[in-house]
Amino acid sequence: MDNSNSKSTGLKIALGILLALFLGTGFYTSKLYNEKKENEATLTREKEQVMADLSTMAKQYDVAIGENEVANEKLLGARERIQGLMDSLKISQNSVNSLWRYKKKFLALQDEMDVLMAENDKLKVENSLLASTLDSTNVQLAERTVFTDSLLVQNTQLAEVVENAAVLQTTDLKGFGVIERSSGKLIPTERARRSDKIRVCYTVAKNRLVGAGDKELYVQVLDPKNNVLGANEQIQFDDTVLNYSLISKFNYENRNLNICEFVAPNEEFEKGRYVVNVFNNKELVSSSEFTLK
Image (cartoon, rainbow, N blue to C red; front, side, top):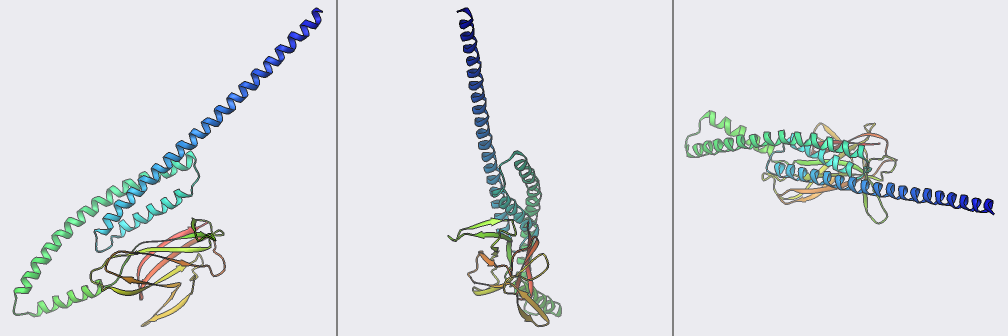
C-alpha cells in the first residue's frame, strides 16, 4: 500500500514539473514574440521619422532651387542624392543595421545642406547687389543719347548673353527602374531583371526669357555598355549628330513643369550603371545616373 502511494506521489510531482516547464516555455515564447513586435514597431516609427526628415530637407532644397532663376548645380546634386536615399529607404528592410546606415547618410546630408544653404544665402546677397548695380547701369545707358564704340560693344555682348540665356533648362533629373503591374501601378526597383521599364523624371525650370508654347527636349538613356535604349533614332544639328531614346514633348507655360517619361528595354535590362541625358537641341542641359543590380 505504501509502495502504491509513493508511486502516485512521484507521478504527481513529475506531472507538476512538466506543467511548470510547459507554462515557463509558453511565457518565454510569448515574451519573445511581444519583444519582436515592439522592436518592429519601433523600427517602423524610426524609419518613418527618417523619411519625414528627408522629405522636409527635400522641400527646403526645392524652395532654394526655386528662388534661383539659374540652376545651382550643387543644390541640384544634393536634391538628387536626397531623392535617391528616399527611394532606397522606401524599399529597405526594417533592421537595426539598415536603419543605422540610413541615419548616418541622413546626418551627412544634413551637414552638407547647412554648408550649401549658407553658400546659397551668400550668393543671393551677391546677386542682389549685382542686380542693383545692373539697374543703375541701365538707367545711365537709357539717359545717354550718343552711343560710343565702347557702348556698342557692350550692347552686342549683352545681346549674346540674353540669347544664350533664352533656352529651357531642366532640374531634378532622375532615372530608375520600375515594375509595371497589370493595374497600371508602378513600383520602383533597383533590380535589373525585375525592371519592366526605366522611368525618367525631370522638372522644366521656369525661364522668363523663353516664350510659352509647345516645346520638345531629347531624352537619351545609355545602358552599362553605352548603348542608347528606346527608339535610338538620330537627328542632326549642323555638324552634330544626336542619338536619342525619345522626344519629350510638352506645352510650356512660363512656370516650373514636372515631366516623366518611360523607356522600354531593347531586349532586357543589364546590371550596371545607367546614364540619363536631356538635350535642348544639341546642347546637353542636364545629366544623371543610377544603378540596376
